[in-house]
Length: 163
Image 1 (cartoon, rainbow, N blue to C red):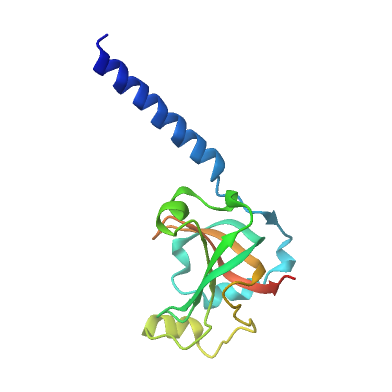
Image 2: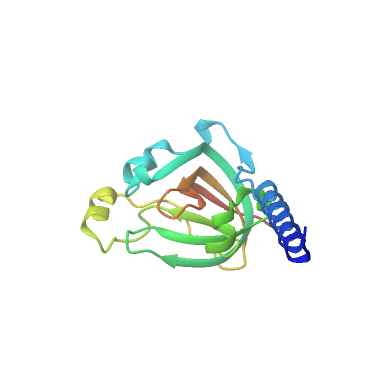
């Protein structure tokens, strides 16, 4: 075996080891699974394009620090959460969501799009948006958004500010 072949094999082994390590570290598992009674199942009727959301845990809790908050055209409030436990992230969260967990509170404001308006109707959640920098506990459905490939909390039943 020549020197170049040995180098390529060693490089491939290192890459495989790194991928296995990343898959084990970023497992995409909820921090805490809660009883269904802790979440508001009626929020699914107001979730726009809910078919794209693959449910991992119907009710879960995740804690972390808010690093971003923005309003989406579909009426949802998008929160970027730096989770305390990185195991809630999958590899798509790591590379495309900047190591954050996406959190969506449905119908937080009037949607710009007609189909989303139909999902929201007259519904407005009783969730107070968190401020950037706050430590929070998010309670809601833990899902994979199949359009993006990342894990998220969507829809959110409660946001508790932690001290």
